[in-house]
Image 1 (cartoon, rainbow over the protein chains, first blue to last red):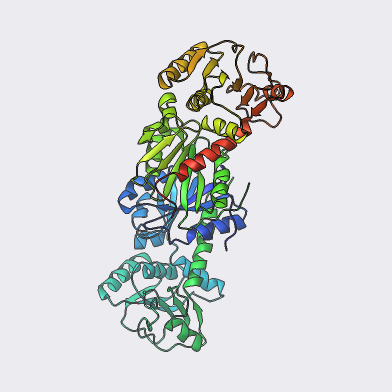
Image 2 (cartoon, chains in turn brown, yellow; image 1 turned 30 degrees about the vertical axis):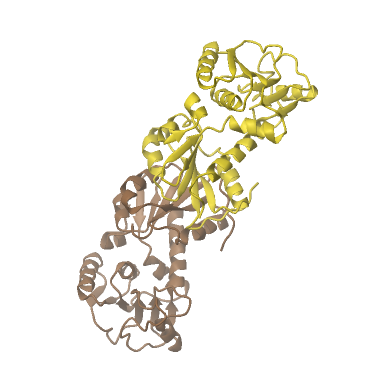
Length: 272
Length: 272
């Protein structure tokens, strides 16, 4: 993973902005991906103190050899102010995590927190189309995954959150944005669910159990879990025991890197 | 020279700002030096369109993990506006090429275009103290070298430039700044000169001859030439033929890198 990179005067820049930033994996992961693809570009960590966000970020975007920006905590919502245009997911959830500069100098923004999940499922040859989904967690990750699943053509999403009003607000936003999918607030998954996704933080602590009542898993159920930990979560352990295919936090992260690398490459501003 | 570097979320940033920037050697040279010294830092090229200088540079300096800035053409003079304090050379010539962030967030600026020459001479065990100098060229490089030589204790500097008024203006500034050294405008070097330095562009073209009437070189004359070309310049060829020690453009550049690496390391803000 740690391919040595080379920086010259001609190297193009991508920046990941966050506060703090030292924990970010993207500089190493993306710089290695660019190097492996023969692209003369690096991803640099940019620590933007939150109080300085509005002065630093627009200036950063004026740097002529900077072709893209990733946003991490706490800037995913504020960064939408600097996009010239955004995709449907960004419109729906009001947050983005990637911006690319186009040939005309404008900026296109997109949110890949959910697209990484869909990409990872496809990479594992798992069908997403027409699934009936139970989604635990209506926060940032859950919102992004719900949008990505709706765009990918799932039939229904039942949103389960300990905060029912948050689940209700997400369902309302999703229903306005995606007419082709049915959204409902739920407290337990309906019996015909064939996809269960945890987008809540449950599972981050070793003593955590399941994110809620997941119902009966069958071999045909596709299971997803956003949590990235060293040992499998209770949900992934259940999925394994029941013979389900699954997408875990690391799969999602890898899928997201793939999706963002493609997004950057689709810019009309080719790497010289 | 091209040690592979590694960029993580914790990597500290240095930026070189210029317009254009693709030709700059510093990103590769400094990043390799940091890596070789075990310092988790990189030097990134930052293309600042000249018209955007005043909005980009102060914002860049607010990035919390950016510890230093190099300035190249055309920003060496404008960059002085962003230094909290500067050294005597910067005061004298009104330009700088390096800024470092101190522990209290203030910025110290210095000019190393001339210090690299002195550093290179010392690295070759050549005495600079008490020399009588003929200096060809009163532009940016000549100004910086004159200051560095005066600070290093040369006895006199005769400044020779095709534009006599430019030479006169430099001599006036130098005389105010350095009381311990004699400065004069000249059209030819006096006979007792024991150091000849070319800081003019003469020698960049293969058909160029000497920068002017250099007088008689003896084995005791120290010769310097700022020009960086693949084949030795006429001045360096003469120096070699006469058995003189010399400092050429590549020596100066290496000396400057050493001096700036030390300058960055002297910050009261240690690399974590």
